[in-house]
Structures are given as structure tokens and as C-alpha cells.
Image (cartoon, rainbow, N blue to C red; front, side):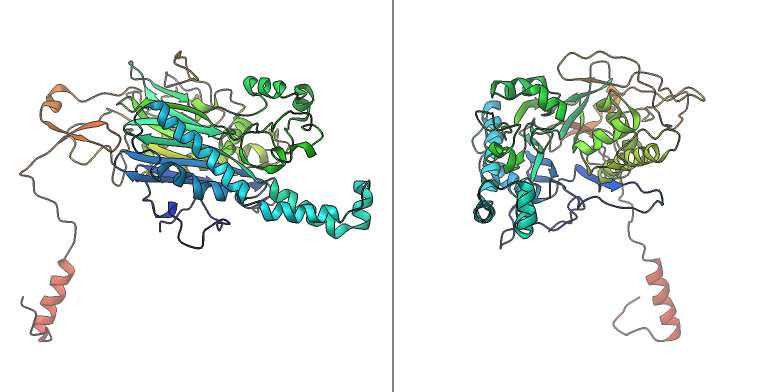
Length: 502
């Protein structure tokens, strides 16, 4: 069973037998980075506000099917633990068989979210029964204050049960199936696809929808249910959470009538119905995709006051592609840099604008398609012996001498097909200097190189051209010199065993 650093705590909903999802091979073209939440202390000691609540997986089912997911849990890990164990099974256990159209695949994803939601609710039966029994032990028409004074043990038990029933999770799932990409999400976990346009400029496209109280479509849906949107906006919460969609959290679903601000709704205001995008053809223009929990975007927005967080995240990822040797290193490098920026900004006496003095859990999953990694230990997209790199230079940042402003045009963000290239914003933190000869464009293989190369298909359906020298000798990778020295020494001493011929 593979080690998964992104799931540091024990699973709460494991079956008595080994879970099928855990047996799926980890996708080698992906990596995950994470950081647990933190309360900033003046003495510098680390303090977490709660156990790590993010979960993720990145698996390969067969040569044409890959599945990735990030779950951003809240009010405990129950819902996120259940979702990470069940989501893959609800998609990959035969549900995609004979599915050929985009609508059929998207329906499989939709049904998977609904099935995970239903399955999690089924686990709450004993909790709801105990809660109902305790509520019956309290006298009718008793105020909350009187109940706590007279029955503190019952009230404390009810609070613990309500917290457990409040456990929920955002979810973003990316499926690669037969050379196409599909993304489904609920809540504010995010998916970003980075690809190049006809001018070889890297673009970033958000493939998920933030289901929160800033989403006008979601506010309209809540209005149609009979809710007072003005009061909800003032409170900045929908019941006990900020998202308008999630998996789990019974208190804003089956138990929404118990909430003063939600009990006027004609049906459950928070739903598990996902937004789904796809299928997107994974051609040579697609470079990589980022899946992340909301903590990553929020930390960067808080620390830098950026209004183009997707663009900034893509730039940070490209920077890490240049210097890291593994995809896990790329993901963790982005996370570490944002964590450091957020911490430094929060602890700065002159710029202390982060009033809460803390940071949430962070998870970032990177799936590479064909973006180069010059320092890769073993790159699946740029194998050794390739006649020519697909880029002339990977130095993408070209700041003016002594300036923090990024010079050039690199990444543009758009929610639809309309994209406009504009100069990059000024970063509030330093970036590495590069030579004046560095470029921000991708140079494809020359015709001469292409004519001597063989085509090989990758697991995403992309075609690569790789030169092969059939007469080349394989370099030795095991050094036997010490062995021969010891044998010769023992031979001279007369202590060499007779069965060793030298």
C-alpha cells in the first residue's frame, strides 16, 4: 500500500477489509504537497488549531484512465475521510464501461457525488438516534441557558454530536478518460488548467466553480428557495459554513430547519450536486493541471492582496517546475513558498494586516502533461536522449535589474474561452533574477530533429518524438571496483575462497 503524505491522520471510515481505493497505483505523472493549519505565535513555536482536515488521492486505473481529487474538510475529518475512500470506487468500478460521449462520462461523475453523499448520510444513523434520545431527555419549553444549568452533561453530549453532524467537505475531482479531461466540484476547492495558446503564451483557465456567497448564480438559487440573501450576506455564513454546496454536513441539509436563518427554505439550501466541465481534449497545448483546497488560494490572497490569484499560482508552479526534480517537489515547493509569504506578512510588525493571525490547511495536487522539468530524476515527458528539448530556455521570469515588477507576458486567466494577454502584476515578494537572454516562449522541435525521431504515445494520448540511437552503449550504473579490489586483496593474502574464480 503506497505511503500518502497528504493523509497524515488515521482514516475513520475504513472497512474491516482492505479498501479497494488504496490498492490503485499512484499516478507517477502527479504529485501532492500540503501544509497543516497554523496559529501564528510570537515566540515562533508551531501551534495547530485543529487536526489536518484535507484529503486527496492521485491514482492510475489503466493506461487511459486516471483520477485525481482534493477534499477540503471542515468541522472534523469524518466527511473528507469517507469521500476519499469512496469517490474513486463510485467512478472506476465499471461505471465508465461503454461510456463514449461527454454527457455519459459527466453523468458518471454526477452520480458519484450523489452516491458518496448518500453513503455518508447512511453512516449517521446511530448518531442521529442518540441525538434524538438525548433531546427527549430535556424538558419541553426550556431555554438554552436553563438547559445547560440543569443538564450540563446532556448539553455537552449534544454539542459533540452536532459537531460531528456538521462535518462536511468541499471536493474537486479531475478525471482523465480516453484522452479527455473532466472536472467536477462542489464547494470552493479549485481546478486550474494551464495550457499554451497559438502564440506560445501560457494561459490558465479555471475549470471549477466557487460555490460560495460571492457566486451570483448560487445566491439566485437560494433566493428561489425563499431565503433572505441580504441577512445571509451580512452574516457571511450559510448556517454553519460559508459554502453553498458540499458533501456531508447534515446540519445544513437534513437538519436545516433547526437553523433560524435557514428554516424558511422550501428545500435543502446546501446541496451536493456538482458543477462539471469537460471533456477537454488533452492535446499538446495542455501543460499541467492544479487541484487545490481553498486554503492555498486564500493564503496567497491574504498575503499579497492579489486580484489575480490563479495567474500568480500558475507562475509559482512554473517556477517550481524549473528547479524541482519531482512533481511532489513542485507541489510542495509552491505550498512552502505561499506558507512562508503568508507567515512573514502576518508576523510583520509594519504590515500586520492579517487580523486573524492564522492559516488554514493547504493541499496542492499537480498533474503534469508535457511541461518540461530539466532537473527531473526521471521525466515521463522528456526522456533522456531526446534530440532537442521542447523549450530553449525554462527561465520564465525576466525582471528588470533592481525591480520586482515581472517584465513580459506569461500567464493570463479566464473563466471562458475569451482571454486577453496583459503585462504581469507586480509581486509583493522577490523573484529570482534571470539572464537578459532568457525567453518566455516555447520552442518546438526543428524539422531536422523531427525527421530523425520516432513517435511514442504517452498515457495521456499526447505524441512525443524521441531520438533513438540503436548502436549506443548503455552506461554502467553499478560500480564493482570495490568488489574487485577486495577479491584481489584476498587472493594476495591467500584467504580467497576456492569457489571464487578471479
